[in-house]
Length: 136
View (cartoon, one colour):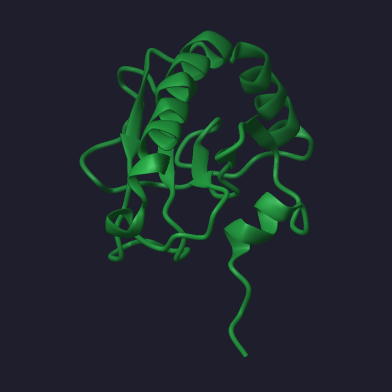
């Protein structure tokens, strides 16, 4: 039996995640192992494994959400900008296409593609999620 897709489970509400963005085609939620606090994952509601498989009709909704999320990260978290990235197969920890939108500030220590991870304190993820939701 195939293990259910964790991102499809989040989209369906069977796995809890701090949701920061939703529209008819896309859901955005906080990464549970963020590079920096406020790190958002954007996924199409439909289960699609890789970027080449993403139908053209979902490109604009997914990347429009990425554009709005970069703005929300600046407005809601005070970041100076954002890293927007998408792994395709290699380093794609969940086989469901997803866009990373990571808050950035000058001197934050992120170099190249080495992504250190951090953790949220109890209740802190919901605070970050609320701040981002309010900034959309």
